[in-house]
Length: 150
Image (cartoon, rainbow, N blue to C red):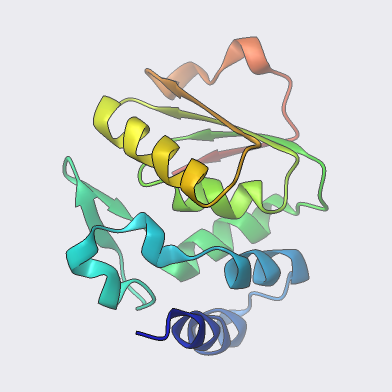
């Protein structure tokens, strides 16, 4: 399967026509391999315009929503971001491709561990993940330049 082609097609048909104009966001989407963040049996659907299950009753958000939420942060590069809800780690990876540090809180242990493993596999080392209730953020790592709740 030509994931590079599918990824480029996703950016050109799902993101740009719907108003994603931030160059850093578009570059992050070209860099991050979404298929690495979904279960093996769903990799063929990784670049489609809908959410996919990732286990524990959770989903990886559709690409457009991830792009829109990231664009709304207005990242320039170099920021410290806190993310509430790591999930599969895909949104985390997009953020980590732009920001200098991402601190992500996930309440489900197995998702947290899987996301951490995938982020290491794709060589994103500027992420720290904490298992716990993210309703109060991650006070020890504050302050942040941006907050995202997924």
